[in-house]
Length: 100
Length: 462
Image (cartoon, rainbow over all chains, first blue to last red; front, side, top):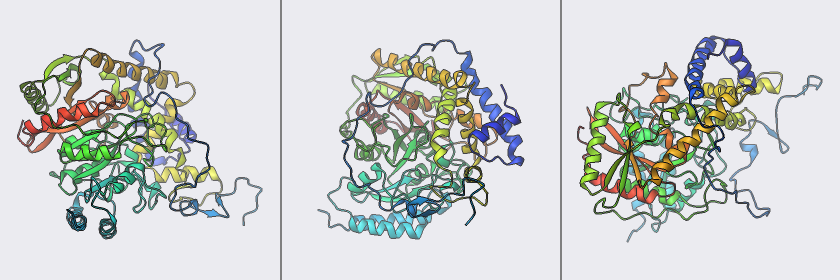
């Protein structure tokens, strides 16, 4: 089962991923190869009604609901690409907003 | 009694060795920054720690305060974590020296350390070959004798496969044994921090220090740290299962010979060896390559140019910013896996792919339970189907690259502890043998590994 060029572009939009036009043919080929390979699982009988296996503790342990200082050596301002007055700065969301 | 100078001497030695082995491209931390940091750490560390003065290199997807944490990706270039991972903090507490950040496949996605934005890492003894991956930088440095131990991470064999290729010991603990606080997430139901060592004991000591409960990671089990077993005289009473599905007809003959020799040695040491069957093994790789990309596509959604790393912008709206940053910041293998993950989770395909893979995962885990329920203590298998392959050999076909992990992904899918140790060579290239143990019985697995390590001619041709 192969994927088409349009399908790859649709998935890329869902994944918020820009795809380079030049790289598209190879990407379509590789994704088709991978999806053809993993699709073999559909031919495997059994498994219906099997409870999904999830490793890890049987129950989530909750922490005490106490306010504690966050154990960071420095704050979000030093991590963010842009940060002002306690907020992450991103480009304007709406076209009617005036640029600064 | 130590006067505190050993750590300084160790810091100088390891800084020199790292500088001399720069051509491996295994270390991402610049040599001068690393030397300064090592000397500063050595001056502060206390001789009472159980890992006092031991240099430990750390894979670049594990957060450290003093070095950048890039995950081998352009999208996190220059990123500095505001906290240490729990594993790193525990190493420091035990007196170890954090010997820089090591190269890896981008976000742990790859089996050759060729998918790093910072160039490929070379195999420690053959520059034309790969060290394995994704934790290839740590494996290569331990294999080259630069550091005694290293941290790596596993989602689908990324410690054991490079350990086998580089001729070192690599341990993946049970899911939930080691805190993942500060490990950059790839596939959250699979990820575990693992360790490399030049010997079973070195790797086990490091594992013991980093293991145990952590209130900052809800997937970490509420258990004490791993207690190290004593080195056994023999393997009396051990029942070792050999799964026939791990010895296919096309297995590399030298790998088969090395495994058969190791099995013979374990029998001579008193172990009972039984053939067992894990019938769903053939479906492990396709199952893994649905579940891991699905989880990755969700985990990597956070890298969008707003909160972390560089921003590739110049666009009018925020979605264009996300798309451009992610399109330019992620390399080809990560982009492929995000797209596969988005595809298998998308409407109309979820049942055919993701639900089916979850069912197969349950059957693979059940295979292991069946084997252990029949009285088998441990399983022994080859770690990889071949020794280290040539650089570039598998880049053209992603499925061929994925198949190099065929014997290692099962333990991640089932959440079990597993380890690789050197059991022989072919034309000078190391071959790894793998133990797979029962959940939280790492001590039994280590006992058998201690015994086999002492008896197997690991540096001789198989």
